[in-house]
Image (cartoon, rainbow, N blue to C red; front, side, top):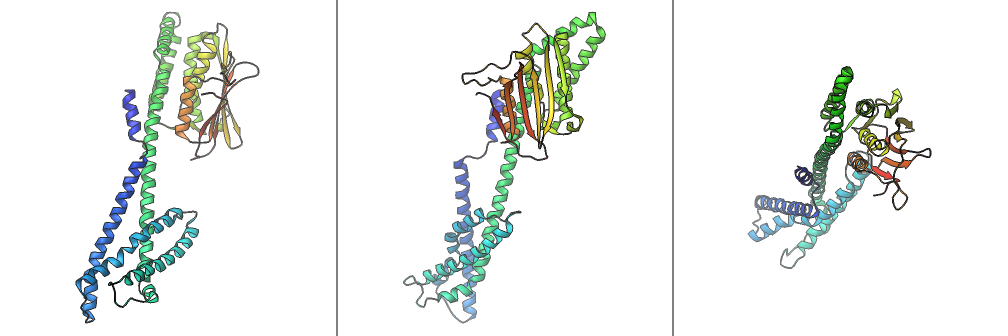
Length: 386
């Protein structure tokens, strides 16, 4: 199953360099084919125009004139496409880009006339070469129009590539998010956790039937919320806190009076969007490494604060704290590593996850997330060893 998910993700990866080069080669071949077709279409038109003037051109000269009309654009296309790539006509910079392209189109008109003039001076091609000025004036509209057509084609291709790349990234992100959600769900529904929960329920059935019934309801609600939110990228902080509270309720039943929970989330922050199910693995890590091995009572504190344009979420326990690595940095568990990967996949450079040991004892995990719609985030981990 894991190999299948990996294969799906690999299939959705961005095209590699060789694939992109192959697409570009096909694009140039298509452009050359279009110019050849235009040349062939132009030939009978030239013959008809000269015949109406009473001039009978040799077939070879008609063929040469047809190709000479369009093939120079194959030489000029790299420069035109470079201009189109460096100065795209997009909102925010279209005025500057438009001005640059006006100058570029004039330069192409001059270059095109120069190509036609140079071709006409090839020996045995034209016994009476046309003056450069005449070519510039007579071919100005064709060159000017062709420049803007090529710019429009490049812009359309660029927009298509960008749309396709976004669709690919969205599909890849969706697949990875689904995999991450499954990993989170797997962690929540670990057989050991289910065994302890069901064992606690079976104990309560005879001693406290009402409590056992309540615990069954809590477990079913947690499972339902987990299944309903698979594939959801972000949820309101209030929904995230509700899910965490249901998880901690079950843990409190499991540990009886050994686990104390303090959740401090201001009401005005409940509508802020946060990554879905981001707090539960952190709380699970705190219980597993900070409280589960201790005979005495332990405490978990969950807080949310606004720091300017940032939302800071913190989960603290009063256990032994993080084990320090060789460089004196806290060593994270697999759950926190998965959390960091989820943040990176969801956002990009901006969201920060930090691990530290509290001066008064215990471990603290902090998440700093930008507040706002559509923010481009990036997940970086500070104070954490690999």
